[in-house]
Image (cartoon, rainbow, N blue to C red; front, side, top):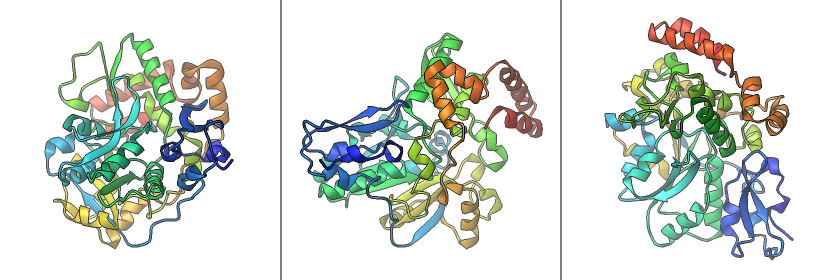
Length: 412
């Protein structure tokens, strides 16, 4: 029978479009051995209609969008929103410029599990702000989006390019008009699984003897920009042994090696989804109306923005151009400025390289557990704890040169 059962695991993106389109509920998403969601087809329920094959991004490869792509720099005018955003607050600006939309984005729930939700509640939308370096569980949000659009509601969606592509394919095959839909995707490095993040949280809790409450994947406590490169990726882990957070991501454990370990999980590239290593979305012509990223390298341009507080790069196409040009503080880049933005965003042209030790990593993880692979592959252990102490000391002395040298030995 014709179904996504024929999709090779290494090419699946986990977008859930196949599950959403199936009228017979013959497809469920279940975690594979690496914790990534993959479709499982119930052959007894499947009638072989082939609808799932029509929406699958793996079976219908991305060909790019026709038309012009425009590059913009952006910084949110609200300093509080800017401080709580990973870069320049572009996500919040796009959402805020729409009248009472439903917003679908990625949150970290109270179990420290990363998932997509659809909501128009202010607190939920605020939780979608900021980077989460994990592939989110899409659950049933595609069907929820379908229902809102069919009812004439406005929807703003934010996700990776593969998730966006799956959504657009699904709506097209389901014959649901997308006129009221705005999509945002990312210049993406690749995504680890929720399994790996849950394992990281367990290690932190066991070592510290606490309960994890919140994990901030990036803070801007020490400002933002190329000269702060390692500090841009400072993490914060809030736990039960601390007072409740008052100032958002400025609170939490930021100095222990455990608090920063997820950086090495992510940037080691050992735990990314297999499809990330041959990602077809490493191009200007992504599926979404607007693509978001950090505007690394803005220091090398003459763009007039107070960038040490964070700056977004936005690439708009189609109706996304109209949306971006309505934003205060949106700066259209000229050719020279655009070339700088491209220079520091290599995943506009090529995917991440698959590490040669990836198979070894996963074999060792399944045989010996996360603590073992953290020490063997992720720069974790007594030696690195001592380096972390020295790194923190250098940062306290504001010796950027020494901190950078130590950081290069600590982090990928």
